[in-house]
Length: 160
Image (cartoon, rainbow, N blue to C red; front, side):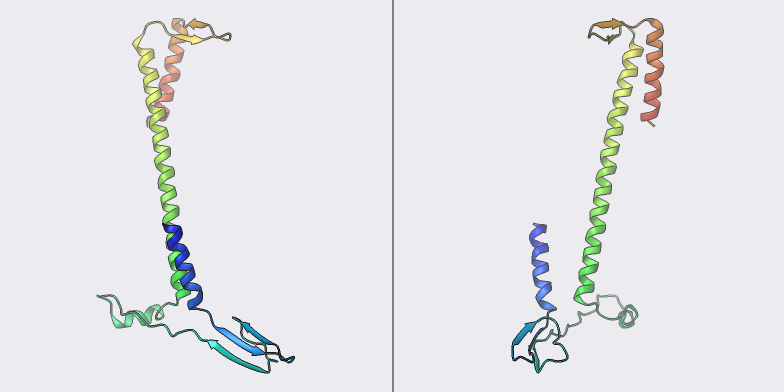
């Protein structure tokens, strides 16, 4: 939807600001262009001049001197640049918010995993770890205590 809106705005903005010139060169060949004719053209004329812009009424609550302070009405190009700038800023803000939300979700997921690991180690019982050949090795009390210390460090890091 926004792609079609952008395309429509581009198509409307381009012809509105264009001037068309017709001139005849020294060889008698007729040229049409959107650029002014060169100085050595025999005959030249402007086919389509830009329409004068109509100033929009000032918004309610503004003073008549406020328009003069800002430099008068803005051209279509200035309005287009402001629109693109606002659109770019909103896209950047949206991307930043999405990135922050993903980072917060990842942090919460890692915190939950670290908390579950601490809970499992504190619960006691027999804890196994896979060995180099895929067999299950049971942790000794010293290894279990070391794993619990590491799990608490991870929990403290991720669950701030």
